[in-house]
Image (cartoon, rainbow, N blue to C red; front, side):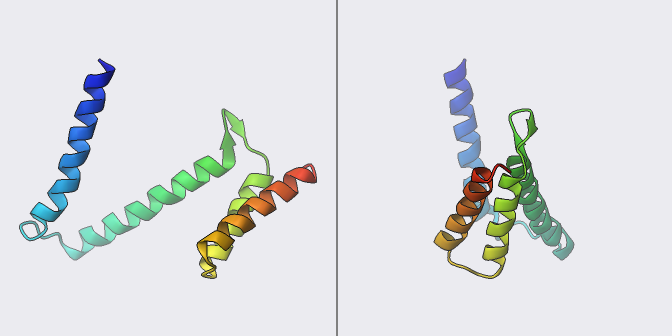
Length: 101
């Protein structure tokens, strides 16, 4: 049963990825729909970041992790290199946890 589910999921994922290049010229979306799709991707990413940075298991993750994510987000917003963003976020989180926060 599990193998069948994995195969169906793989086939569906491949079909969705293949549909993009195949239907690009045949399907024209209105400008408003394109804007909404773009915004929905951003909203989904923000929701994922919020969920993973605020919770651990079934409870609150503590303040160190969200503050570390915030520092990383600010560094990314200031267009710091990716390695610097990751190191700043990790160092901030580790430092705050070391201080007991």
